[in-house]
Length: 221
Image (cartoon, rainbow, N blue to C red):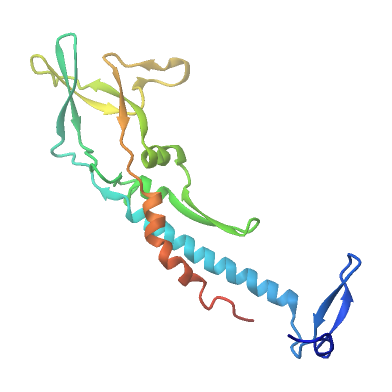
């Protein structure tokens, strides 16, 4: 065990501000603390930004991206109303075990996929990864829940007791504002949405590689 004399030979006792003393060790290195803090902050930002991008890509990979089957839609019997079978023409049939983000001319990579973003917050010095525009929609798919669809018949598509139509998330209407009028022949249906996690799976898949983003990030000038 080192003696007080040997310790003082390499340092000195200075007041600690609480009525006592602390040992301040001497060193031959002259540290530029402000510069070190600046480099440390820049290193953290680079590492967390790269880690956020890795997690983002990993989460996006958990989402299937497919084109709607407009040429050969499925015919799903939704219900029977007033003696007529309501047959929905469904061109977006999701996978049973994976969230599907549909490719459209407006969203070539899929809307839900594009919605997953990452951003570094300088104030909290942390990175956030997740849905940016539609958090409620992605949360619904991540954890499951309930939803509502509307059945709208297609003119001139009835065949006897079979009425063909389409499903929509928004109650169809004509006009806007005070002139808005709901279309006739609309039926609403409530249903259960199955949980298809993608954020949790994406984070778990990227977790092992996150430490690699911090390697050799502390550097000058």
